[in-house]
Length: 176
Image (cartoon, helix red, strand yellow):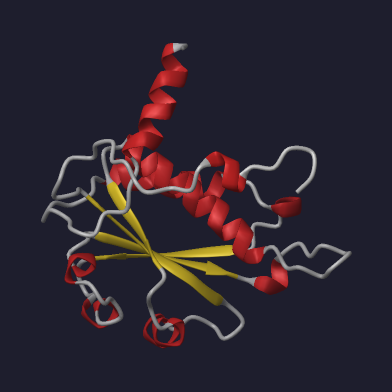
């Protein structure tokens, strides 16, 4: 396998959800690169129906109350990922709005970049989105998709086998 490919696949072997963070700041240049990845992500019809609110540790007491796990409260950076459905591409045949899909693409790309930077992340969906909106003064027409915690993990990022369905159960060739 080509060296670049090997590095790419090793990156995704190491990627996992981190729920415990070191008390260590994320360097400004690393955070800037992650935010650039969010901005450059692909979206349906290039509509970019997203907003990302970066909240660092200082002054985050009220937002920390939305987390169910103490470890999330210790993450030095959280990014609240938001979708703006009114700006998204909508599929004509069934009227599916792609705002959340587009946000998920951007966040997934950023999570990969964070792993490459040696940072841990967790996509936290177990939150009260209305409470997050009140705390951060997010307009009513914006959806809170999730909160991504970012920081240096307590444990080293290493390959971790997870229980996954076999390919035969999820991949279909030609037809279902």
